[in-house]
Length: 151
Length: 211
Image 1 (tube, rainbow over the protein chains, first blue to last red):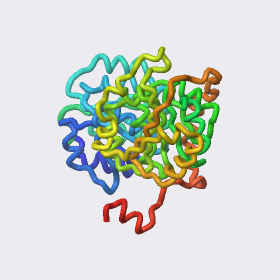
Image 2: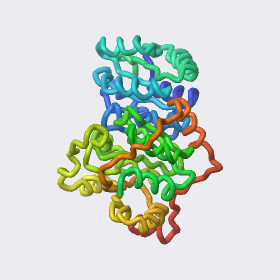
Image 3: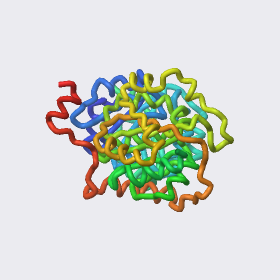
Image 4: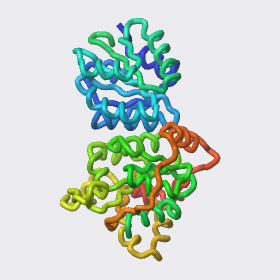
């Protein structure tokens, strides 16, 4: 179990992620309920590729950014990740609520050799490692968040 | 006026040295590259993502951000338009060069002219609309565009109708994508350049706010 408040505090205060975007997903409800406008900005997007675009723009200005989406909508960003983020080397942390498998997206991750983790109770250590990897590779990274992980 | 003349005037005369310009579409990028400046970013593929990318940049800098594209790119990326309109980013300017054709693939028509009221749609979404078509019909009047843009605030859509026709004397972009990214990063974070965003006086601000 990961407390949503602790998750935000670590991500925003320790790792200095400040700007986020995404399309609402029921699985992330604990995160929405615990957003704190003093430490972060959240831009609701109309579509997953719009949120990826906005966050990639912010990343180009030097900000650390993340997007939130459901596993079913992952295919909306696959083309743009390949055509834009991986071509220009623009890192964005991608949080995906995973309540089912998506073989196509799994294949996409392995083909493009993207770093990924499945969030557990040791989320601080996991996020820190992934963040430092992303700073070196400048590739987007994937964080899968399973059912009942967030409270 | 043809597209290459419009972009020449826009890039050389209307944009300030500290403005960011995102140019979208392969042919347009090559035309604009002739007038390259450090604040230019060229997006030759992944064009649909460009407007939201420009918004992301505008949100995180105080410099004016111009996205310059053709009408077919605007239509392709229409799903992100509501997000741009409601952003309230005063430094976001969306320049649409409208020829009503897919000039890169043999002049097939776009659906832009069939939209009953494009300006109405964009205005109701939340954009300020400027149509500079008439200014660009007469080269003597293009200086007026510079003056208007100096005092303009976003989020704004600038419509310019261009005559069909492309410049055949164009060169390839010599920067790699990573070089372009790094150049833009340095440009955005160079605070010495300052910003050209219009700062209204108290009285003007009251008028803008309806006060």
